[in-house]
Image (cartoon, rainbow, N blue to C red; front, side):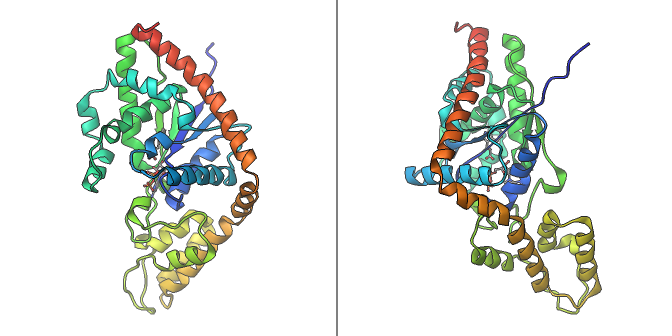
Length: 326
Ligand code: ADP
Ligand code: TRP
């Protein structure tokens, strides 16, 4: 009889700006829900953020904000190992061992690398090797499930390729992970209709002020149909965001108003704002409490680092042994 292996979940987020609805629905919420179902590891990818954040004070402030955001949104530090990537330096050594079996071509094909160059970022080695470090994060704790938004799918595929190659060449060392991507939230649209992203200035932040949140929601781009005209919820960015918060009955009710005519986008935006604002209300309160207790947050991250390091060390020792560095 085989005993089912307990699911091991890992995901990370770069502290490269304020977290938004795309981050929340694409990655945070799925990851936080999975913490009930297996052993979860969540981390702040500050080594990765160094590829784009050049100001040490900004990196520090963002890292602290992301820690508060996750804890406020329901990360349970008893259950989930929560840590800063830089507190687990084993991953950088593991990344080197993985890079030995990583073909250049595999990295050259990565969309994220090509997109970053297209946006004008200088082509540094760190930007190029980014997916190898991400593979090390995932493989270090032998995770089998990686909850992410669709833009990270290719990086998880690269991780799988690297792990398979390493196992073939040096013997079974790594668990092969799977991405966990929820279709309905794989790409959350921003206020301009493109993918919501910190780098497109099109976000609705999770913890913006009431004024900021309202103003972002009011900026959502719609078509120019007049008040009396019949409207199509399926092609509307406001509706796409509303759907993330609403029950089935609420969605149907709003869709019916779109189709009925004499209903303006301004009203839909108001309904969306109310949803966003009330949804995050309990998290905002929790965040304000946590902000008063930096010692607690530091303690959580310190404890998480120790737990993550212990796992990463086991994997690193096995990988060192496999390649002949014992
Ligand atoms: P950004 O594009 O804002 O810089 P990140 O690349 O830091 O976001 O993404 C962090 C996590 O959030 C990843 O798992 C990513 O797939 C997810 N994510 C980011 N934006 C979206 C979006 N618009 N829709 C769905 N998931 C997203
Ligand atoms: N590259 C991811 C992002 O930008 C962050 C990340 C780093 C990550 N290491 C990871 C995500 C490991 C999942 C697993 O969103």
